[in-house]
Length: 444
Picture 1 (cartoon, one colour):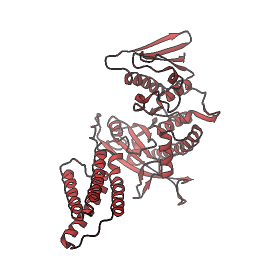
Picture 2 (picture 1 turned 180 degrees about the vertical axis):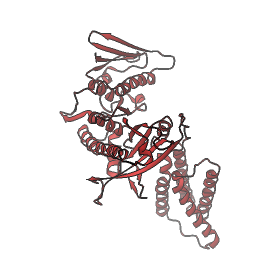
Picture 3 (picture 1 turned 120 degrees about the horizontal axis):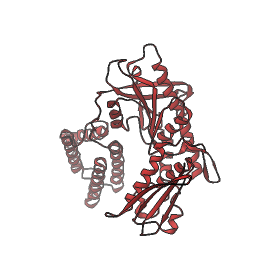
Picture 4 (picture 1 turned 90 degrees about the vertical axis):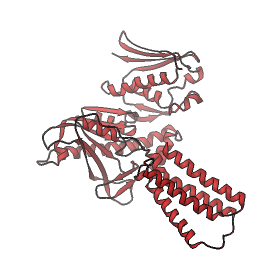
């Protein structure tokens, strides 16, 4: 929120000054330089008082304001006698360039908002270490340098003496719009409770990857543009299928490689400290969104994985093909995956809460019926119209404008796919203004 407010203030100041120039038909150079020095002073004061936190979020803006303040100070020292002639086009282009530059400098503050650190709940003090692995068997396809695929991982682990204790390993894969530190508080909390957590930076698919050799890899812009277009429903389902499965192939290869490298290092006669703490008999995988799908896929492929947690995940890994405008799902059940089914219950309950007015009612039931188990959740909320009811499980579909702000239109689609993976069915009965009932049936 602070980043957005800062951007709005900066753009408003730029546009307001342009209007002032146009009204007065004057370049207003003196006023502009006073504003620049004042902006630097105010921003510096806000940094000192802690409103803005010093760091990478605001470093670009601070440098920009510092340079402009220095140039403005030089202007007042030299005090030029003649004011240049006002030109409307020049003033407009200067305003546009200023808006672009300010947006670029403020963007890190929007993408990575300030937040108060969450204190770990466990008893262990947490330490961290980073390593960069190079996969000699794979060329980097997202770069033209001809280098091998390079992946940097970061560990969070309990601060104990080497070899004194062993802890379960949790390997994390970030989503399409993330990097290895995206869930920092979660990693630290897990480590404080006795886990070794390893988070992977998927090079060129992370916003940025800072490697141990000091180099930095930025996100591939083609990947970023495609991810945004898929999120916004721009691409059709065939194009979405092709791209997401291309990414999944890269992600699963990354996760396999990282897990193999960790196991190889733990098997050394004198492993480095973090590797000496890992209990290789207890391995869990987790991830967010695309990373969650990756974790779920490895859960199918590896026998040494004991648990998988999918956070806000997709079912990409369960799609085996695409025919007649629809994805072909893997018919083999995911062994009654508790975490995936939890996504169904949470999604249905979340929808019932969202669309039921304050004081309304929600009823949940679970009943065995011959050879199946039937879960039902009923609310007395706004309900769904007959026309919309036929499309509620379609990807990106939202019943009306009031629901458009409540999600991205993927929740019920994913719920349906998860239920079908468990060879079950999901149905909805609803009357507009009289509530809805969702019924999930699963075989016993």
